[in-house]
Amino acid sequence: AAELHWCYKVQVEPSNYTCLGPDKWGGNCQKSRQSPIDIVTSKVQVNKSLGPFSFSGYNEKLEWTVQNSGHSVVMLPTTTDGTEVAIAGGGLPARYQVTQFHLHWSRLMDAGSEHSINGEHFAMELHIVHQKEEGTSGNQNDAQDSGDDTAVLAFLVKPGPKVNDGFRPLVEALSKIPRPEMNTTIGGISLLDFLPNEEKLRHYFRYLGSLTTPTCDETVIWTVFEEPIELHRDQILEFSDKLYYDEKQRQNMTDNVRPAQDQGQRTVYKS
Ligand SMILES: Nc1nc(-c2ccc(Cl)c(S(N)(=O)=O)c2)cs1
Ligand SMILES: [Zn+2]
Image 1 (cartoon, rainbow, N blue to C red):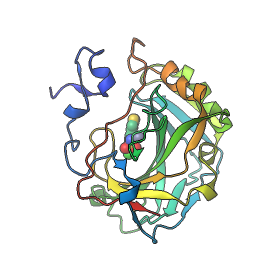
Image 2 (tube, rainbow, N blue to C red):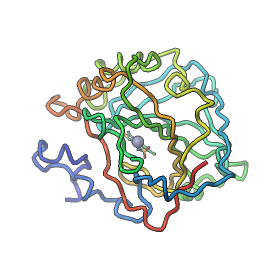
Image 3 (tube, helix red, strand yellow):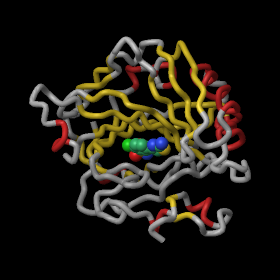
């Protein structure tokens, strides 16, 4: 089965078993520091050193490439003038630069997030992926495998009564990229357009884990914010209705959610 590509559980049968579901993913995916996890709030440890984040460039109106990656919709910043979009603080050991953001979702409003809180899943989960900025030491290469080379900010999404205006450009772009490898661009958008107000971002969970997609590298310092993002139900359903996993547009892209992994000996901290 080595040559089979990885996929989500929902794709295994419709693809006639020509892809590997989560229990068969290779790489580091069967190791013991994996993501996502269920966050049991009664067992988290308050860590007072988990202070506020400082977001730089998050308010910059940028142009983004919007891509159907075959597993998610991925937004890549096309910053040309080198404006850095980065985070620091929040108990992170360094400054981390944004590389992309993407989402996970379902048609079921309680099954589309990867992380869950006390067993409760949300409608979607937004991941902003950052890479660690190495100092002048230039030891980029060997630092690549350090346990905290990647920082992902995770936001849970729930259905609300109002249309979320910040998401309109992304939702409207989805119908342009139905098939894998298709791209489009949207301009004049800042990351803050997608997020809850900054003053609501002081409360978050923190733990060490992995990419939730193969090769599941155990290099991620996870932040899961308590404050959810609210989207109208119709906006959430657009992702499953307009995007496809396959060239033939037979398999709607939905339930791109990895099952919860064992927490093992890890502690989840709380700001
Ligand atoms: N093209 C795609 N890339 C990803 C991806 C890449 C890096 C990361 Cl860190 C992640 S995740 N879910 O762990 O945040 C997902 C998904 S789909
Ligand atoms: Zn993700």
